Image (tube, rainbow, N blue to C red; front, side):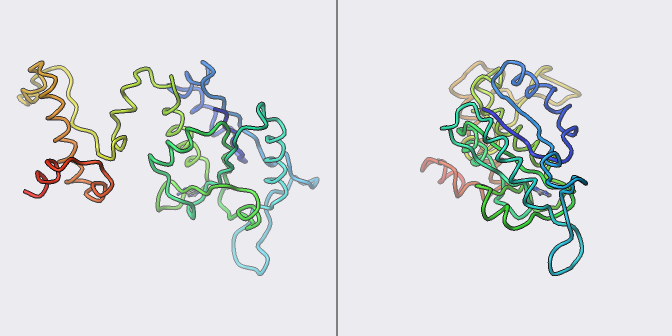
Length: 242
Ligand code: ADE
């Protein structure tokens, strides 16, 4: 997968893209991420990217030219012009990013993420350029850069080979619509608190059953609204009704 990030602050991404799982995915060629400063695509000598809104009011608005030019530039450089590109605007007005959206975007060959900073976007960017608008939550940040990092991370870890242990993405919270079951590691007893005996029993069928039930209980306690969408058996639905 190839991701282009359009931002006025490319340096914000550099450490994140060199560290841990993302850094390794990039080194191994599983993922390619390129940052583009769209100020370089401004059309005037002052390299202006924003101006006050027509009609007055506070704040500044990102002009269409630098963003359209930068997107057209990265599209022209596409290695496989026939492959699908999604052009994603990071904005608190967007669709909420969730695990389902991460899975959807992980299927796409090329993503362009557009980050604003402090300000709004000229509406023509929304209307005539972008294919998706994404929000990472119901709060307002100073810019789209941190949200773009969230999206890159959430999508990249679903790409084949990126996580060392393929099992770990399958067992994730949300992978089956439920929160993950409780995990324990050594020691079996810590400050008098023991690991549940079942996990030490070596009985894998019973351990699977216990984990499934704990997942359902945890989801019921913390995020009951997720159960509407989860794939539960009749017996499991009965268990929740008790
Ligand atoms: N830009 C500012 N706040 C944001 C949010 N919550 N999601 C996406 N982009 C943003």
